[in-house]
Each structure stands twice: as structure tokens, then as C-alpha cells.
Image (tube, rainbow, N blue to C red; front, side, top):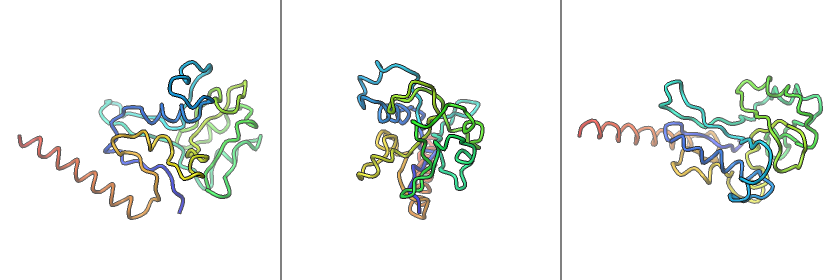
Length: 182
């Protein structure tokens, strides 16, 4: 089964550390200090969204759909499924910036901005690639490493993940219940 970044939304604090970690990991400098000086609009492959009341946050990112609507609409062939991992990847060198994939994505998780890694001089589609190059050398995706609350995990959607999520929710309910009693 495909390992992906999974979210336990009940643990998300909405701190945006995952977004910043993604930007740094996909920058040309790979440096927290240098990324601020890099030109262009920085776009993260993961985004924190909040409910209308602003009380609940959840990280959203590419779900690597199968079939993937973004692949089907990309006339340039810049979006493809990686054979080894199964992830949907954008080859930024071939992206023309037509925005067809942005409109095709049912989850609205494809961004549009200047690439920090390919050196492209035009705006392109940008989305989560699960930090595929890091995964290939055995590292976790940058957003998972940056998440201090434990809301992001890199795992299969199996019983182990479901059990972790159930435990987290029960722990939160216990903390909330205990606070109410005091």
C-alpha cells in the first residue's frame, strides 16, 4: 500500500510549520535563512485550512488520486505518476503554467507560483510530491519532520494509522473532559 503523509486533524494546532518546512525543502538553498531572500512567490505543497469560525485547522495536500484528474488534463505531459512510488508528480521543466490542473483538482490542492528548485522563469503548478527525493534515501517528508504536535504521520492508511488516530482522539476527549471537571 502507498505510504503517504496522513493527518490526525484533531492534533493540528494550525501553526503552519509544515507549510514553511515544505517551502524550505523545495527551495534552491534548502536553508531557513536563505529562503527568505529568494525571489518569487513561495508556494507550499501543503496548506493549513481553517473552518469558517477559525476554531479548527487541518493540513491539506495532494491525495495522489487514482485516476488523477490533473494527469488527464495536462496537455504538456508535465504531470505523471511515478512508477516506483505511485505518487503524482509535476515535472516543473515541462509545466507551461496553463492552470488546467488547478481547475481539475477536486481537492483544490495545486498551487501556482515560481519554482524554487527547477529555476523555471515562469509561473508553474506546484503541489505536494511527498518529498519523493528524501523518501528515496529513507528520510521522512519535511512537513512530517516539522510537525511538533504529531498531527502529520508518514504511513499507510492501515489499522496501525487508524489505531493511532483513535488513541489521539480519545486522549483529546480525556483532556477536554478533565478540564471541564476542574
